[in-house]
Length: 217
Image 1 (cartoon, one colour):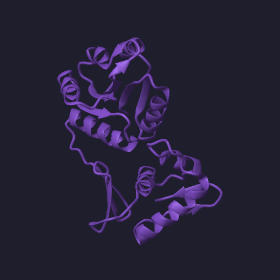
Image 2: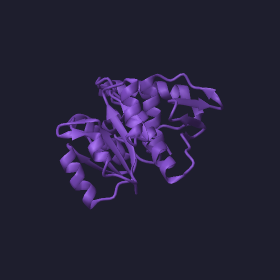
Image 3: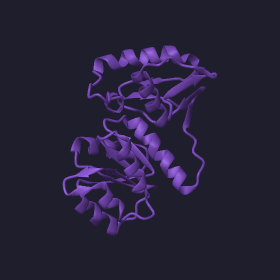
Image 4: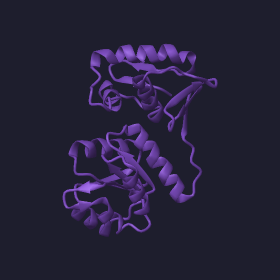
């Protein structure tokens, strides 16, 4: 299991990110500031660290200095060339600006870890006869691009990453939460699943498990 350190002072961003990482099978550890992060480093070895550039008691660089063999992804609200150059010169493996989409960040985490360990990065997933390009955020059926909305894509990705598991409506709603902060209402979830089923056709069987939720094998 890969261990990931998340250093982020925004509790809402941190909780969502930690939850998403744990759902992907990572062991995630959250620290709100430089002081706590440095303490965590002394007791735990991390494979990757996601560091906010601006912290209450310092910067992400202060944490980076103590992580010699750890992959680094910096988070920041600043998106200018000099900041990006500074981040990479400071040892960053990747750089993500806020606000960001969770699925995109997870794809970057996977890619960064693969590059660090020398593994071949495979930015695709398959479910039934559907191939999902997780980096580009696109899905293909028999090599033909599926015209999916952003919500339909996130819904498909949720089923693909939890194949064989029964997902409650609440779990699904949390996973397709809009990155802009707009929540999908429970009474519209059935509509989204119906539309996705129509677009997937016989390629993927989204099974309704009465009283529990949905499952894709």
